[in-house]
Length: 316
Length: 142
Image 1 (cartoon, rainbow over the protein chains, first blue to last red):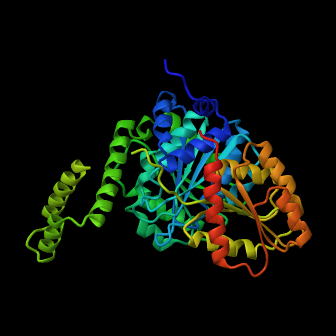
Image 2: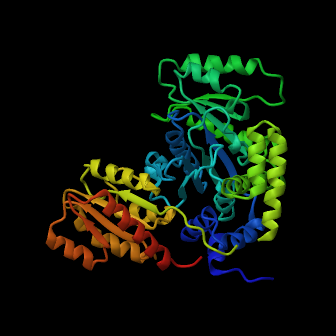
């Protein structure tokens, strides 16, 4: 039986400072992150992870704020992971999701952490899945994962959340068209937020029409109208979340082995990308030259590049 | 693979007290964002306890307090609250309208820098970068 460090003991006891520091360690890939992630494995799987995604300005943060209030009224402890985009140019980020949740700042039953996407595509940061795990291990009963404002293909949240809520706003008629092949497909629950606005009914009709055209599935995707402004529809949303989370085994997130395979694939791709950009190896230059002259196709070039990188990695 | 990677400094930019003039804090937040930092930005009128909890949850390296109407006089109390919460590694800077005599009081209370009108973008960015490194070195290990 190995002794847990003070930090790990505090983390597993749910202490907020330890939770905050563990998140930083994982987000920054600090060496201690390995110990933390290894030690928490035995404590995972208790939290209900609820993902909120949708286009920018749909009202995700404001809706999450209302949802937190509802969870607190049910005496659930809450952890929030809110991701905002990093600048692709400077790497900087302005993290403002929690402005909409400020009424919960002083509630010790609510822990909110803002993350920058740090160049990762898919609506989250590369660390988000592990940070959700840390909140789970720290005993947060409901973990809310809010993605960056998403468009068509940022569906990564689907692999992490137990219940996926896709938030839309009225008046985005064309946007509904645009995203129907994307994030709408991952929804367990569709929310039409800002239902106090004139075009809300029309948006609901469009979504119903879209769902009716789908191949029959075993479960229904509820469409819930909410107004984060006055709280209308929030109890219905909460009921639907618990219903999906507890009664539908099919909505369960991917098995952790699959998630780690995905994480490994992403990290390997990122490493390969960096190496291809950095490598000045003559063989790589040859590959680039042949690719430019269309002597070889892209797949062949990629295979050769991986071989060259492999040899160089072994030399390290 | 034991080296610690460099990471963007995390900075909380906020306002305490009753003054709501947030133009300056927004400009500074944008400066820091464009310098590659991760900035947690809040509404004005934060309570001291909120600032402490925000800084703890977001695990920031530096807190920037914007003060245009004497709210900087609350900062010594904030410094004590941060220390009581075990967050004394966090560096605190104040920017805005701060009389010289008050600046001395703020420094005595542990504030790292006070930025007056006319401070340059470069000076603010350099200073925050250096303070973030100091905070990293002073940070308790996990």
